[in-house]
Length: 466
Image (cartoon, rainbow, N blue to C red; front, side, top):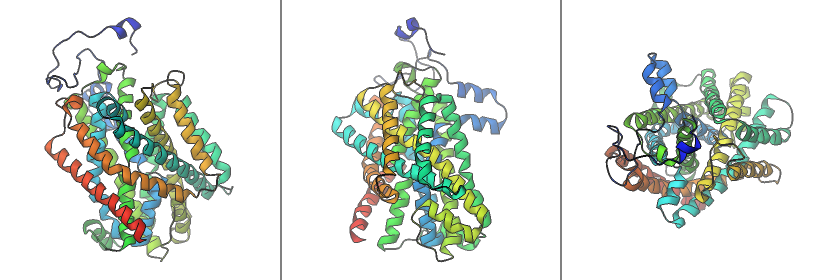
């Protein structure tokens, strides 16, 4: 419930912190006992049905994981399956702990600091760290959003015999309308339902009749080939899975969730209980598992059909859907197209929204999908501008695949240093108090930074080699 002006302006009196709040260390985030309670925690405690309890916990982590399978990601997974069959299935298991660690750290930063990632950087770190990251984020997200809008239009064209270009502007305007006119509760609900559409990619595997022995081998035995094309696809898989825009989005969404429950002041959002962090970990883990399950079945489906039929030249997700039609039937191709539409409609507002959060937090503007446009005009202006530019990309002759390549390169180069910065933030007691990373999270997080750094170097080398 929104506070009255009088109560909102009153400074909270110093008081002891609740047991287990993690705020005993001076200088760290302090959990105030009089802040609005987390309704999810209360609802889970009252619910006896384990399935309903699990569904109550799902939130930003699930949406973030599902948005990772955007049309550009789907295209990359399809290309991996078409080019190398089941040989890259193991990468989905290999990347799962890394992406889970990074996204949980993002969630922790938002939950404990009460700010988004850009807001934390602005408050505690020099501008030379913040501004390059922000510029790269905005450029990469805008290019990616434009390519994804084109992919949605192309997927609709697979179902409706009308030129894809006709759908570009309506799709873009519809997505903006949802963000600008919808309430946070409506938008959050739409995102969660769109996540379920991605299960269409799992359903397509039922039509492929894969060789289970080969599938198990590809899943459990890592395949390493020292040729530029194979290294390039491994780097692309890593880059499309652990993407910087997801870091910014998840941290900001955790803040939005707190604002929605009535924690409108920064002092109300600072700090997090062990229960809130545990639910955040469960939510994030569920989202990342969901993301990698979808990726796994896309590689499996295209490996069982396109690779087996010798169709290795797949440039996009829509190419994969079209190529599947004669091999796995019209229904399979239609399911891929439906999944692609859902993935795009989910991913585009997250791409533009992550850019808007980053810009708004950098300059201290009001931000959040829970805010009305009149209260956060600059935030929504960035969303509209990024979407408009994305729409325009489809009419200026810039190849969507080229746009995705550019955004992938930017994301690949940005990911490693940004993971390093996130590790420094999540171990900074001025930001996190006693909620700094544990040993295991630090091991996996720093290992991810090293892997992403090696991937960035490999990306540069393979770009020159061919």
